[in-house]
Image (cartoon, rainbow, N blue to C red; front, side):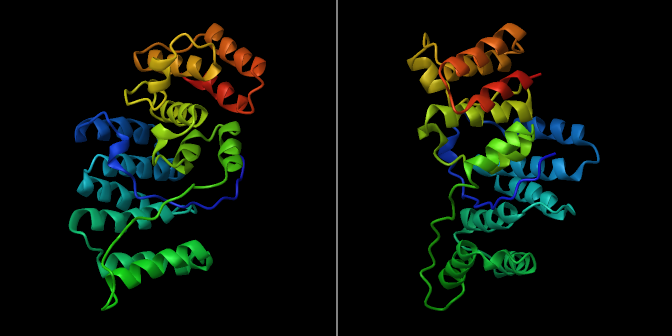
Length: 264
């Protein structure tokens, strides 16, 4: 497994990202099946618990999202838990337009113990929370904390190393439907590689509907993902066709086309 050094800036997710409303039971089932497959692998469980919490948070199932973030937080793993602590504060705000001091103190302890508070962005963010919510004359407003989770080369290295769950956890889903097609296809593919044939809204679908006859490899992957959700795994011919198109179009994202072949 490749070791990749990266820093994660976590977002407060926008529920509007998900046009397709999923009920609580459906979301839980999607991730619980994958968590059970992970068995005793706490590292895989950490990312799956975090992804489940993120999905639940996006659909405004706040209490259940907290439950899954707490499960992720409780696992003794060396992975960066910035998302867990930041989004637990964000859920506090989403529920009550305030952030509990205990939640803030818990996050600050983690950032100090892990030395992540030495990062200027985290220090600035925590200072913003402190000034806005706990100082007497604070603004009492919260606009969220978001950004690219890491450099794209780190995500690429994880995909090339077939660490798909970890790669997905690093992608910023905020406004994904407004991003370029390659980014949307990458996000959709990583979700399918993580969740299997479970159905969810494909960010690439708007481009597919607009250009259904396009020969672009990205559109071919999107078509393949739609079929995959209906239970049809890409054939060897499908995979070779996508890889051939990506090479012919001299795409710098050939590693994404190659990962398409790992759909099972």
